[in-house]
Length: 100
Image 1 (cartoon, rainbow, N blue to C red):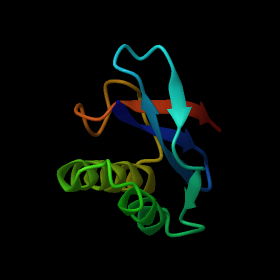
Image 2: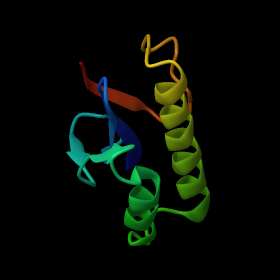
Image 3: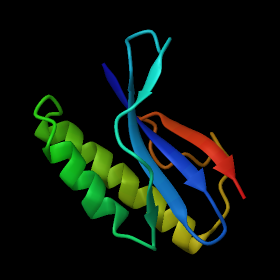
């Protein structure tokens, strides 16, 4: 299974969710709902969600949370994202689900 980050890039907030796919990316399944920042503490909510899934290793959780932090910082400072060239992390696939 491969973990992915799903992003809704909006003007007033950013929605972040976790997903997973099989090895050949044929099927992508949602792992969490979207959590919207800065309306909620999306980082803490996603951290809680990952900790509840014992099959996600500690090192994978750290990579995911660091990537989420980078995405949030990019949204806060730039509000523009030219995917895939501006992708904050090349390790974790990021799925942009929409822009406003």
